[in-house]
Length: 116
Image 1 (cartoon, rainbow, N blue to C red):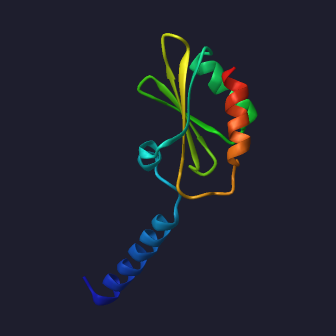
Image 2 (image 1 turned 120 degrees about the vertical axis):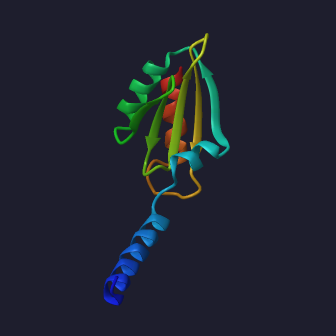
Image 3 (image 1 turned 45 degrees about the vertical axis):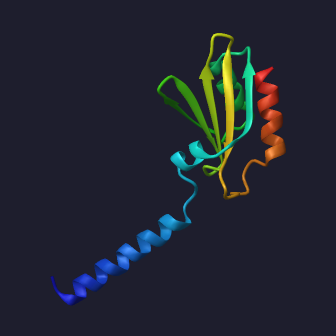
């Protein structure tokens, strides 16, 4: 490998690493954070998910081993809906970085509205 090619690869790799460092919080990091909201609801997970998608159109939904996950903002909030015998369990976790998306008071209102 020539020295010029090696230098070009090094510059490209450094750029990729810099971009990755500036990216939003990862899913595993969010899942490991302490929940800011943890409630039980008589509503089904699919009802809550549909309601939250209407209230927060930017939410991205994903199914994961029996649970439904909604990413709100640029990975700023993770809403996990787990079916239970009573209805569902709702857990909301926040990333350490604020993306300026959905503010906490608004998200709390939407969760309260969709779980009752």
